[in-house]
Length: 80
Image 1 (cartoon, rainbow, N blue to C red):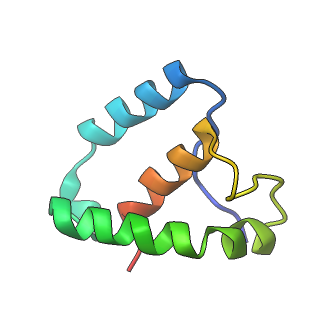
Image 2: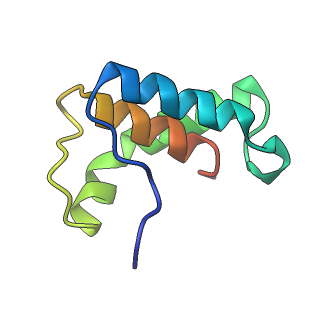
């Protein structure tokens, strides 16, 4: 199984990712309200270690990083 989350390595790349997400058609998102988006982000962050383990990714969900933040934002658009 592949994941289609974008990789980021810097603050600049994260800002660019957020800009691209803002230009997407939000009707494709599962969580379009701010509340639903934030609830999904919190839920995803609670299970992030499982995500990284399942996909054998080296990102550690206990250490804040640009990648962790990028993954959480991308996940919040669709996470239920």
